[in-house]
Length: 117
Image 1 (cartoon, rainbow, N blue to C red):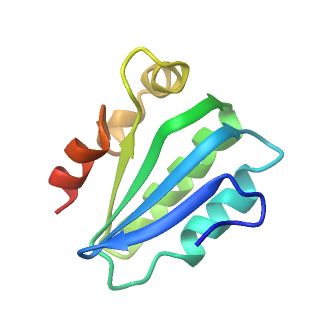
Image 2: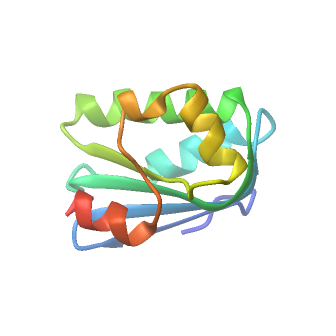
């Protein structure tokens, strides 16, 4: 499934939903991106992995979207895992806001999938 803006692709594998977000995530598209991810997340999924390995820019609205996802998933006893490669700008933003206190941040999709399973 791809959102109308074309920046998120969602797939499910063994009870884990993976949302790969590409390009930029800012005020112009973070609400629609969050809505697309939530719409594709069945209540039967154990975990959601948001993969930012192809994301080049993340602003505060994108960070707020992630915190909303943490709350929504927590309400449904589901887990959120985020992929943000070390040394990239997006990973640095997540470090600054200490996002790992809300949900695990992994350096690779494989590591996130292993933790989410």
